[in-house]
Each structure stands twice: as structure tokens, then as C-alpha cells.
Image (tube, rainbow, N blue to C red):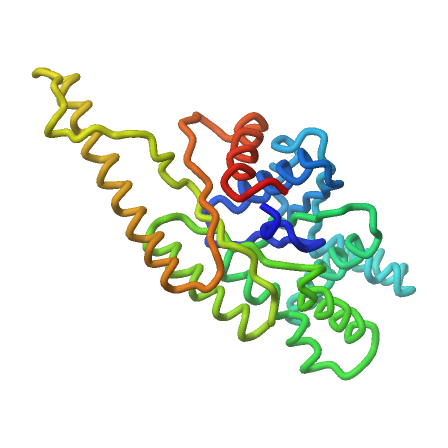
Length: 287
């Protein structure tokens, strides 16, 4: 657990559907339960974290709001009002690629610099956008030579490349496609951004409860017995597949991974997050 939340800002990223929001909530809950002042940030506009993290402050940051705030803080209040009412604020993001990511990261930097929280956990974008999101500041520095946007990009790069201030936690599932993507994402982020990568979180790993050998199960005959045998065959095959993918991940990366077990629950809620947070703390060590 210490290595997962070793920086002031932890950005959680991964392929869509691997459980980024779950891992964000779990890290925030585990840190808060350990006595740290935690802020959870969501970027995709889906208000999920507040329901999952009662008692923990949650903020939503959108490019539109961040750009509006940036303009107002730099003396363009009248322009910001006009852009907000006409919808042109979205056009600016299109005309200046990366500016929306810069202002969002700039807002995160501002929150980190305030010193109000020990840890800021960001539910980041999916892996494909994560690369452009995190490389936007370097791209802006390469194309702009001065002015407030240059200064903002410079501040963002200082945040991203300082291992004490920021690290990226990538999430994957123990399946072929997500493992392939997380390996590629890691290499790209290290080469193009120079960010610190924390342990990879492998989500929905089999809980390792005993599954009997289907050939040795003395269940007799009938539909129920056949269903139980089929379930055991499926579970053992799924576990073997997960083991193979985790082993492949271990061979491809240099940092450790942390497994987040799959729980037999109907849906994601605050109690589920508390259970997973306790499990993660036990697996990775007390914060």
C-alpha cells in the first residue's frame, strides 16, 4: 500500500472497463482509513465516486469548467462569460489541441499545491486518452515559447515528473487484451513523459478459494450435479488463464503488481469498496 500512494497525486488509468473507478475509490478509502486527508477527483463527468466514498471529499473537474476558471484567473472574465454562453469554449479546445488537458492538469496541480490534502487520487482517463492527457504538457512546451499557457504547461510538467508529487497507477484485468494494453501504455508513458509508475493493480483476480477437481466430485447424477461440475470446470479454467496472464505481466514489467480480488457481489457500493480497501491493505502492506 505505501508504494501505491507514495506521491501527493495518484492518477489511476487503464483500458476502459478494467475498473479504474473501483481502484480509485479503493485507494482513496484505504488511505482515508489509514488517517490521511484524501481528495478524490473524477474527470469523466460521471458522478460515481461520491456514492462510493461517503465521508471523503470528491470533486469533479471538466475541461470546460477548468478552462473557464483559467480564463477568469488570468483577467479574461468578460471573455470567459461570453465563451460560456455561446459554447465557443469547446471550440477553443478543438482549435488548440491539448489545452483542455493542460487546464485540467493545471487545476489538479493547484489543488495539490494548496496543501489541504495528503493525497489526491484522480480517476483518470482510459489508457488511450491517458497517453495524450499526460503528454499534453510536453507537447505544449514544444510548440509554445512563452506566455501563461507556457507557464501552465511548465508547472504541469514539474508536477508530473516529480516522483514525490505525482505517480501513475495503471489498472488491468488478468486477461490477454488488457495486459497487452497496460504493457504498451507503461512503455509509452515512461518514454514520452518520464512519469513515475506505481505498482500495476490487477483487478478482479480469482479469490483463490479452493475449487475441487470436477473428476473427483461425488455428486451423483442429475441437473444440479452437472451444473456444479460445469461450474468447477469453468472456475479452474478461468483461474489457470488468469495465472498465465499474470505471469506474462510479471515478465514484461519491472515494477511489482498488486492483486485486487474479485468479490461475489451484485453491484458496486460503499461497503464493497470498504471490503476491497481492507483486502488491498492486507495484500500490499499497511499504509
